Length: 279
Image (cartoon, rainbow, N blue to C red; front, side, top):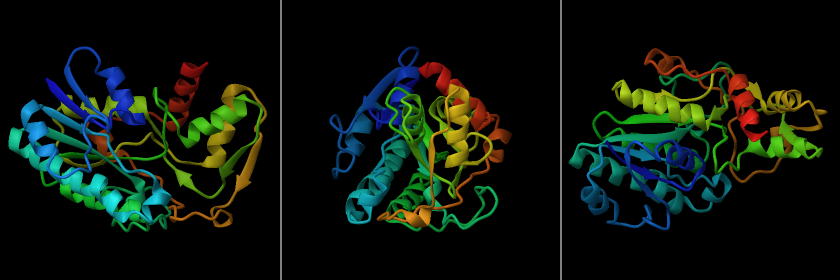
């Protein structure tokens, strides 16, 4: 099996590189190797490699900056995905593309399913939704929505910021009114490879750990697992000035991916495994 991995220096891409280092023929693209935002580059480069699977972990994920840089966000999150989809179709590769909970407006009250209407409220979310549509133009594409990623060799996530603060005995600022379904990169990698191995039908899947929590609830769980005082500073979304709006309720249902044979463990279990790896 020949794998092409984009966004190989990022959080999810680094986790895939570590997992696929042995046993497959892996080509890893970072921004320095191939600039996905450049026109006319992707098609010839993919054609020369003729991969069996393309894992697109690349993304313009600077949510606030995207509000003033819509062309940059669209170039990476949408137009580059279109080129990858066309290249995948041309060489018979299966495309796996990662998206986000930001495609929803966050006004729900129960975990979003793949059938729920999308309504992104930010340029970032809009660019990711267009990317989903374009990715699905290739046969059998898997679009996997993840959120609140944590863990992995290149982790710089909000979860890891909370862990680092509490381990250092410092206070951690946490939202009390944003509800999320965290995604542990190791479990995302496992689920992805499981879907590929089982030849799961193409389409959109929510690839998040089971359950939901506020950031305050997650911080309390971190403190409990570390055996330290929960020095948490509660923050409300309305009290923070952000360039791009954040969805408040963004828990995702992972029932569909479980039915496809890739059940995701509870977020509490994932968090415990992540902290054990750190300690």
